[in-house]
Length: 87
Image (cartoon, rainbow, N blue to C red):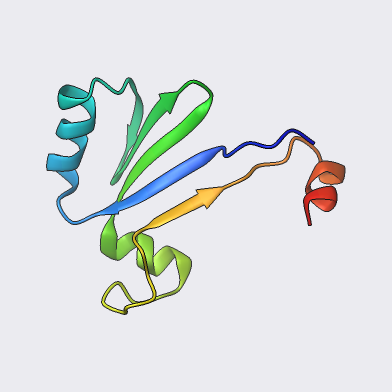
């Protein structure tokens, strides 16, 4: 198993402004835009932007609650065995 983080997702209040900031301001190379999700690739890690309310719904919590920190991290195993080993 190789330790890595495959995807970092930020929940943002102003999606269009955030996409412009990361793409134009910081120079992140945009991989694709699918609806309300922007994907950037950073040396093998995907950095994604997602509207805050939608990200909260996706992970099953309220965006207004104090337990939601507006980001998610993902590790994708390359095989079923690798996933089982990580668990």
